[in-house]
Image 1: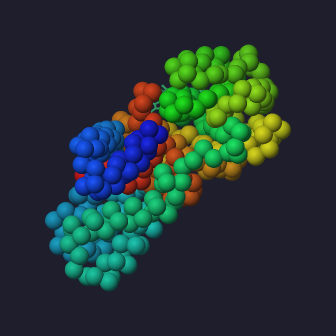
Image 2: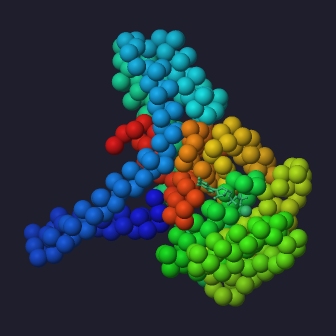
Image 3: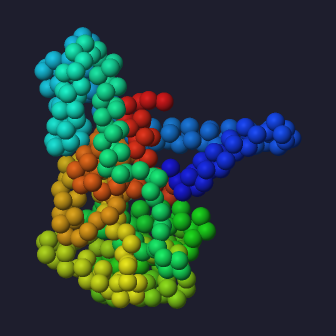
Length: 353
Ligand SMILES: Nc1nc2c(ncn2[C@@H]2O[C@H](COP(=O)(O)OP(=O)(O)O)[C@@H](O)[C@H]2O)c(=O)[nH]1
Ligand SMILES: [Mg+2]
């Protein structure tokens, strides 16, 4: 779901109210109803696009669960074992799987005559609840810095995870909302990385602040924030290098960047977004572990969920690290970054309408 769609939804909700009172002013009703109808269609189209993006994950997940559950008249240890295996091989992760299986066991113990469809629904409920507890919701999404101060997002993650692409897509969404966006090219390790970010900034209509290749990332960050403040930018996105040479090195570099930010804007960074490549499955868990040890991470973006069957990582990672998933990437295109909506996501996985 894009930023715009939130507004569309809001609008649709307002409109529904207007429709309800339309007896008083019948002349506005048809077009208002039409707008509400359009908003509903847009939402359906969005779910359809997400379903397509998550097709492979869904196929894998669904068929495994189906095999574990279908045709069983009672839920016994065998069924639960198969279910456990299905979840683990869908990259949900061991800890989260054990948690889910325990919950199902408790419910089955209470109601011994659960059929396979009920079991399936239970599973859906438990996973949806788990996602809710991980706070991965869109409701609390906000670019809420102080009035007159840019909202600063530091973007971290290993090389190739999708940081630059995610920044580009995000910048495009923000500029379309009318926000003034500054991007800092603090991945100074390769010249190509700076140029790639430059291309995205131009496409997005954002301003990029850069220095030469090999320059100090903290210095680029400082320049970017100063320039953003001077030009009254609304949002600053800082692209960092994802070299995991060693934990101490990573920690030092990220700390240095954070410290320099605070010199310009005391409470920056307002958000530290860890970008993880969802198609790497278990490796994404490991990366999350490393980065959360190196710095305080406040949100996650999980990319490349299109074309992978490993989308189950989204469930396990949000549960394990209790960090909200803010965005998911479902393609390389500029419009293929979505605000993460746990309901839409779980629905897509279970093939629900
Ligand atoms: N299919 C797909 N590819 C993606 C997605 N996000 C990023 N990529 C690709 O992943 C590769 C690495 O992305 P990049 O942004 O350069 O990663 P960085 O090293 O973390 O900055 C590029 O080829 C991107 O086009 C996504 O959501 N879906
Ligand atoms: Mg990059």
